[in-house]
Image (cartoon, rainbow, N blue to C red; front, side):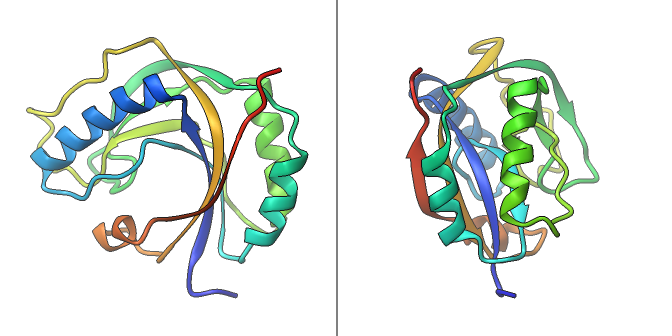
Length: 169
C-alpha cells in the first residue's frame, strides 16, 4: 500500500479545457482555494496502479467521450464536490469505468460523472457558472497521484504521472 492515492482522470478536449480552466481559476480565486486541472475522475485506488495503467491505457480503443451536462450542483457539505457540473452517465463511460476497475478490483470507488468548478467554497454567490456549452468532450486519459485528505493539501499534491490521447476513431 502506498502513502499516495491514484486516480484515473478523463481530461477535456482543448476548447472545453480552456473554458473550464477559466471558470475554475476564477472560482478558486474568489473562494480562496487552490485551482486545479479540469477533469472527470473515472476511477480511484489506494494501490499504486501506475504501471498497470500504462499497459491498460495503451490497449484502449475508445474514441473521444462526449458527455451532456445535466445540471449544476452545489453541495456545501462536500469539499471536492462542492460546486460542479453533473454529467450524463453513458454506456460508453460505464464500460470504460468497468474496464478501469480491473486495475484494482478491491477499490470501492463508484462512478459519479462530474466536473468540479471549485473545491471548498463557502460562499457561492459570486462564483461563475459554466455556460460555454451543453456538453463536454474528453479526449485524454491520465493517471494522477496525490496525498489522501479532504483539504487544499490534496489539491496542491495533484501530480499527473502519465497521460494518453484517446483515439479518434
